[in-house]
Length: 619
View 1 (cartoon, rainbow, N blue to C red):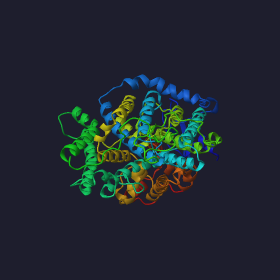
View 2: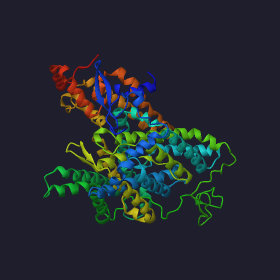
View 3: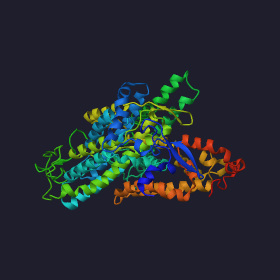
View 4: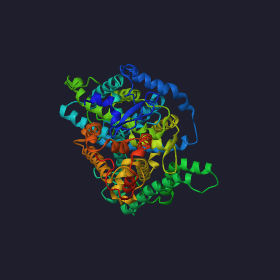
């Protein structure tokens, strides 16, 4: 079976994807135990060729625009509700903290050419534009680790080629933009629709775990609460000569602030279903404002109660200007490192990158297409899989998805940012999923009831970030440990509905104590653990590759491999019924159970439920 044939028959081994892809329900065929059963997953694979919508040559972009922006824009721009305000405050802190952090790391890895100012400006304008014309009102764009790693590799490449970094970055970004425009024009996103829950769960759990580990303490960089207990950590440098300063006191206070912020936010969020307070409106209001209340409460505790303990604050620049300060008019050397005799810099590097500054290497505009293709794979997959995660049917979104439109818009933004020497921004998975969860109404057990699909929170968040650029010193009032608490909260809450995480915890449970679910009631423990083990192997591979800078550029390739592994390898290791129960959405699973319940031996079901031994679907 070739890859194109796999696309037309993907429902034989894939689960639900976006239910609104073409604004109508369409039926597919799934083979279960040799019999055909119809299931809906939003694709058009059973539609006769002559009636399939042709989404190539730009028609997919127009279809996305008509389905999302043109149809729902006014409603999404006017549906201001109480929930919008706390979500905006929460996501402002969730977006600006990584922007400043990534900006500081960019400055170290790109020779000071890109820093916090460039990252904040890029985050602000990209977010504002995307909130106005982007196909997904929920998606948050920002800096990500893999793109940062790619930029670091590009900087080293520029040194080896003896070419100015910003010039090479600009040409690479323009090529990447072209590749994204072509991909949107030919509807390359049809291959993203081959991704199933199998791939989505690995990717979303990876990003969630990265947030959690970075909050606690990354083994690959000195970031996180753990490093406060190291007296040599840079956060202690500014106060190490102060009388009475104790790094251990600061470390313990930082730990209390972070854990307290996370715990208090989780506690307040759960009040919605508690018995406290006088009515449901008050409980809902407290739940909606849970994260902002937690942030302001523990920031106040830090400044008012423990003012003598100097916790780490955000390292933001004092003025709004390009990060690279020049020693002379050529702006080839950095002040003060390369010209210590100068009291002040000659000036700052210009915002617009000179594409002709090739240092005599006229082949660079063409050579840049090679790294740009790798960058394109990374940007394309990051955007596509993030939107795929957001648009899962279990989230009950009603306004449709827009894969091609988003690819076009984000690709153009990458090109513009590259021209102005700013970082390339892509869909930020955890921030996007946190935005989704914050806007959602859920049952007490965490299942989605509905989502407030609004552009207002996205627009307000990035407007606040734009405004903060002109009052940067105010951001220094925010303790970094409180922001670590928010990272921890985002990572933990995004894991709650991840089936992969649930099955991972079952590796340490007594089988008879497994929670009741389709994949525990109707699939053997051995098969379930084998499926989880494959996901775990891919998850670990992705994390290791992402964390080792020398090979981090291969990160998108491993993500892409998850799709053919699911299509070609897993059907050889599991029966079709097992894959249906492990890798389908709730609607497909419920329909499968209804259609096959009469064929299931009740005694065997009881055996699996109680002892988790044997497989009722072994071939």
